[in-house]
Amino acid sequence: MRIVIIGAGVAGCVMARRLAALDGVEVVCLERVSRDDHSEAGTGLNVGPNAVKALRAVDPELAARITAASFVWANWRISLTDGTVLFDLPLKDVADGPGWRIRWSELYRVLREAAGASVAYGCEITHIARDAADPRKTRLAWRQDGSEHRLDGIDLLIAADGRYSDVRRTISGEVPVRLTGVAISRLLVPDTSRGLIDDYEQWFNGPNRLLAFRVPPDHVYLAGTFPIEGEIPEARKAPEALRAAYTPAEAPPSDQARWLIDQLCNGVADTHWARMQEHDLLYRAADCNVLYLGDAAHGMVPTLGQGATQAIEDAACAAALITQRHQGGVRDVAAWLAEIEALRSDRMRFVMELSLAASDTILAGGDPVAGTRKKSGEPFRDKLKALYRQIGPPIDGGKREEILR
Image (cartoon, rainbow, N blue to C red; front, side, top):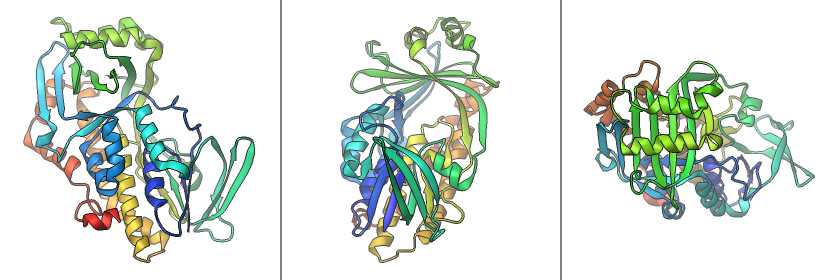
């Protein structure tokens, strides 16, 4: 059996590592950038406890490697930029364990080292199509180091090539994108805060929000959002505009907020900007054996930090199910994909809807005090418990020895 994975990101590396262990399966993972190129690896991220739980269930060694390269995410606090605390939640109250805080470049390094020889780097995909001999299968061509390569008769093509997936667009059509009316900036800076910044925190000035936490070895990941319609004017990215957006009008900023605002204003040249968006959920192609995972399947708003988290959850669940079916003698790839879709779709709709609903405080007209007070109630905490604990089969309810074998 031939399985090809496009993209050695989060989901791609987890899948490549697990599926390469199956007897009689040829696994090829093609990555566009070079092995050590982390130029598109962004800044930092928090990974939810649900991803840690899922990965530990299917690949405890890989989970341990990521843990060693991370700081623990154990608490979530929300304040106003004047220092007024609105929300302070130990994750142990809603999750089975902590999450991770890590630099993107470090996460990629760990994942790609673990995926090993299954990944080929510097591969530019030049052709993707259904196979002429069997339309359920696919074929593709790519260029690497000036040489042309081609594979036909691909039994399973896994698209893990991100939010702007070329595979999904080619096989299943253009993906409608929904903008949410929020600008987001991301920045990674050396930690000179002298202990002011550590675990995951958010600070609001009206609907304008700062978010920050420490990541190894000694840096702070900082993100800022503010409501906006349409493109982000350059004037809104300027230091004076950013300082005005996050500085409270009625009181001086807290020491934490002052340090963060200074970092944001001093780091405008290194800041990554984007508009918050989501797109429709799709796990598999309608008429051929193509599986979409991670952002390729469900680009979502990042409000609850579930982007990379769900890529890990996707890959852990899909790898566990494929392993179980393959070792049980089931070789019907279309049946695998239908089962993955059935197991994951309701879960993913819940995650996407909760992430969007939790964005209420960063939208135009958002009230961080009222919105955060609502998040302090039991209904929202119950949803967080479902988010962090209730992954679903085969992770939940499966025998550990069946998942790992």
